[in-house]
Length: 119
Length: 106
Image (cartoon, rainbow over all chains, first blue to last red; front, side, top):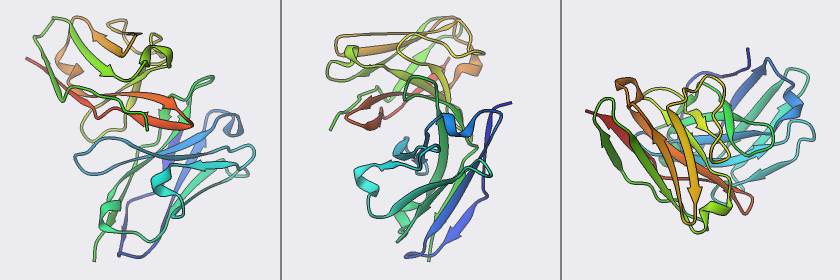
């Protein structure tokens, strides 16, 4: 079945970086853009950006430009999201999400990765 | 930047119809998508492109959009429908989410 499996929870100190992985299976990885969305505790969904698994092209939300890098490894059907200069406000669950064909809507989500930033 | 406005909460009696709105400037001209998120779980797509249901989503879930308002309708509400619902659009190369609506089934 189509699924996205993310890496495990992380605890980081302020100023550090985190890299979250998202392994895709059950579909053609290079055929659909992958987006990243985060959710702070008790808050709503916040879009971060996307990576085109076919070309490696990316685009990021204004808030995250300069701090986020999204990449992919087509040999292992895995997308990555790296966020640098972490601060406490970055504490959140980070999700990867696959777009549905023909629309920027997300039909498959990863299970989420909790990233905690604490001194 | 584009904004989507949702009510914080909506309540519905068991077996009745719930309607959750999503307001945005001329939202009827965009494709609107809806997600259901239960506590501790990832969001699930329940409606895409205004009116379409992904496979596995009950027919009780339907959507519409016109003018400045999109609406998610849940008929014959069940206890298991309790969740937070988010609307979402793509605008100016940006994904925009509404703030979310907590649906309570009484």
